[in-house]
Image (cartoon, rainbow, N blue to C red; front, side, top):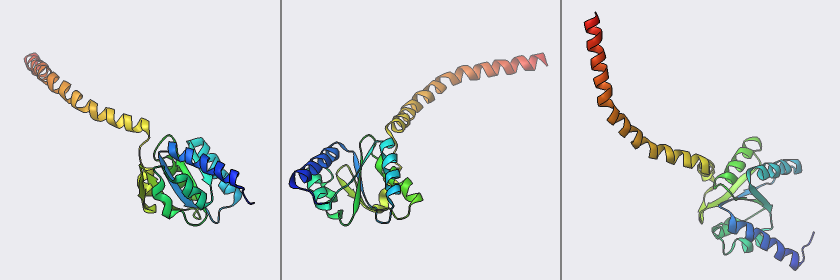
Length: 174
C-alpha cells in the first residue's frame, strides 16, 4: 500500500515523538515471524510499557534525526521492528530478549541507550539493568549498611558487659 506525503509525515511525527520521550530503543529483524507471533509480541510490549513500530527505514531515519537515537541511523537496514522503552531503560531489551528465547527468528540488529549505539551482543547487559524500584532498593541497602554497622558497634560494649555479668552469675550459681 503506497503512502501519500501526509501519511508519511504523520508516521515520522509519531515515531519522532515516541523516540523523543523514550529511554532506550532496540531495532530487531523480524523476518520469519508469523503474524500471530508479531501480535503476541505487540501484546507483551503493551503490558511492559514498550512501544513497537514497524516503519520503513527511510521514514525511521527521518524520525530518529534530532533525537538521542540518531546514532542508530546506519543500523536501519532491512525489515526492522523498532521497540522504544518509555518507563524503564531495560524494558525493550528485556522484552526482545525474552521473546527471542521462544522465537529464534527474531534477531537484534542494534540498540541504543542514552545516545550511545550498542552492539547487538550487549542486549543481555541492557536487559539486566535494574528497574527503578530495584535500583532504589539497592541504593537504600547500600546507604543503610554503614548506619547498621555503627549501631552494632555502639551496642557491642553493652552486650559484652551483659554477657560477662551473665557468665559470672552462671559461674557463681554452679
